[in-house]
Image 1 (cartoon, one colour):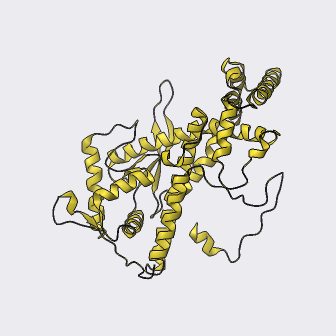
Image 2 (cartoon, helix red, strand yellow):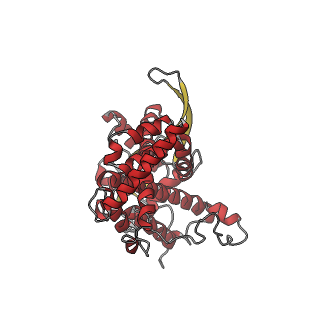
Image 3 (cartoon, rainbow, N blue to C red):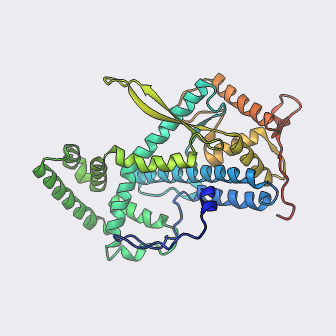
Length: 372
């Protein structure tokens, strides 16, 4: 991303509205405000304190890894928030937001067991993206209806915060708003019209089954969203989100945070199938960046144990524990932790005179700008 900007000889042209698209880039905050604020603070602190002290050849990949990690956290947390909205009708407040956990392979793929655990963990992330597709479609359906409703139009957000608007749409869906009956009845009529049209033409039998189910009348928003996603197909729904995730991970790059490989897997009742699997790693560049970044706010004093807590609570990166749904032995987790500790020592980022945890401290390789 940074190298692409460096290669441009001029500013990008002004966007032009085509086919109903908006020409201006809208000022809108991500629904994952926690991750967005953390990303902003990370970039600001890193540039202010190291922008003039780290050589250009070193700071460019460090910024790339920091941006990839921050954007990935924002995207996954926003996706998780959409699923929660789908289940509860409300966006999680700032104090309740938390990162999506994923197990990081500290061996960078050299240990097959740790690599497999990270791949299993990221499979859960892929399932989250799949689960979010109908949730995002439901939001889009209600947003389109709400913007043309004369009673709801006044609540359309003028500023960057859209959480209150999404909460209103959630109330409409749960039949807790004065406009719920009108909007839900209209969607039910559209479901009947769509089902009749599909049955007449003899196409999309899976979508027809969704629209015909009794649940469609109880929750027309969900039924319409699922049927539209079914007609779009898994390939279309998955391609764009995975492209963005792969870009954030900077797959198989020296300073990236992800690895991808092609493997064959057996499925019950089906032939062996080749598929791509992804894992999260901690490259040397990522480790250097995060160590230097979080030494700033702690006046140069940061223990190894505190560093692991920061990785977990700020970015969702797990080293010595596994997310729900992934089973790992205590030996594997301790091995992963020890491997990360050894790599930090080799990079000159960790010092400790003995094995006592409170004696293991991180230290920087580059000086902080004294004028920051």
